[in-house]
Length: 335
Image (cartoon, rainbow, N blue to C red):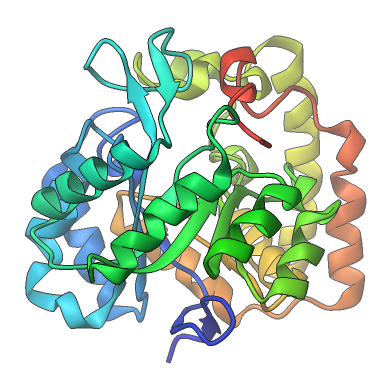
């Protein structure tokens, strides 16, 4: 049986590893709805009970895919979705889109939630995140409006994505925040500076997206020109030029540790995250059954303190080259 972790103080228990669904509709190459549907259903069979999406993934396609595939199993999982990233062009939204903007106004919260419910075909969203924070809009106003969705029975729990510890505290004072989502991996350890301690103090789960460094830690990405033409990683600093060459040396060091552990680099990276804190819930993303099954096996991998130390020595924080996003994307996080 899959290990369970709490979604915030007093919140529901969810699988220790969730499933990030973005890549099924957006960001990492062509869609394959049939294989994605098989992956979603196989995830349930393997004990995964937390599925993560957002209204911007595939301009609503991802929510429709999940709803159509899993609606008949609605009582078997927790559905998390996000709102707030919009495009003035009205088209596909991505971090480098010059028309992209963040809207966490109280008025838009209600509009976005209703639209997500329609696409999903669900009566209720289990966990509703603000995808990013617009610092010009008081977080108290945003969370107050989100709390209204809870009172209306449209949402069960609230979350925030990519916010500062100070924002998390201010939000939690308005309404309990069940989870905060942030990129967290051997390659992205910013949460360890303050956010993880804040979550422990307040009883908030830390949902770790891109726990394998957007595929970098798997060792599968060595040449960005081999990625699909619309793969967003082509423009991310860590995947370009000298940065990539430097980061691949770190990946080789991780692979050596994984070989000694007797697991794949992906499983080893996930096991390291699971060992950081019982508050951490990684949500590795995939649209293929074989990678899903590989990832789930990480739950049973118990790293020794020596192995954890070897992994952290293999990837010193200061050695990772390049920022997580390009300049425009970086301006939207940490508020």
